[in-house]
Image (cartoon, rainbow, N blue to C red; front, side, top):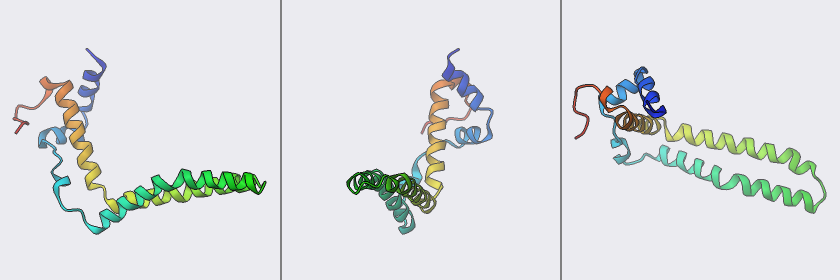
Length: 126
């Protein structure tokens, strides 16, 4: 018995996983038109990913240029923390529905591939 099959059998003991398999979780939520709140959240996440390391690198270069290493020692963690909160704000605004739907879908696919004989009797493929 492979590790992935053993993991799939253990996952089937979790209620969330059994519901995902029984419901035939899909990605239909991604076909809906995104709201302004969700787009704002995705924009926050994108800005947080794009801005963090260039800003910290710029602080490092500035600290070297003006010969003040305390600037990067204090400014780097502050910028990183603010960036982390910006990312978390984006995740909050984007909503948990899409993340939950994606996780349910991935779990269902994993179970179907690695423990097909443990699936319920209903037909899951459309």
